[in-house]
Image (cartoon, rainbow, N blue to C red; front, side, top):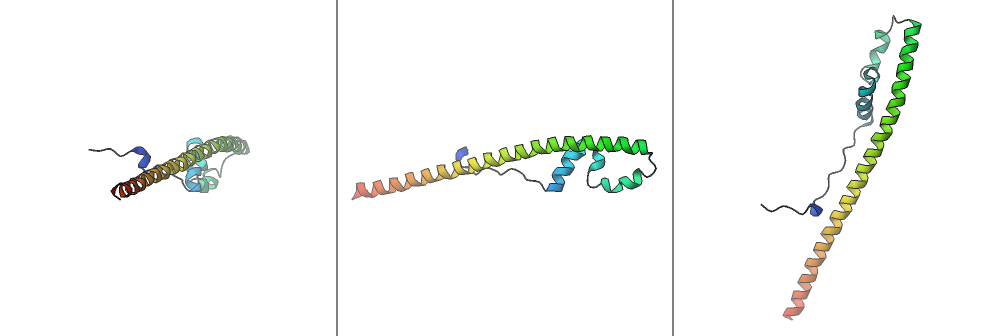
Length: 116
């Protein structure tokens, strides 16, 4: 079975998730209570908490958002790397394809001249 030259394959673009999905994926690992599906229920869940408990929770949430910001920056950097890799791969693909097309055209022209 013949294998295809990897440079002739069109690369796959990176997966780009929706903003809410990215937020939930990252925040779900840090502080699940702050995901979009759970945050709506927090008022009811904590309706009887003391002021001290509320303050401790606010501190915990603040730390969670700080960690989220760091991880989101990493996510964006990785996505940018993936996009650059995709762009380079796509450019390489078309450059390789054009070279092959030009070589085929030149062979046809040379054959026509040699038969003339």
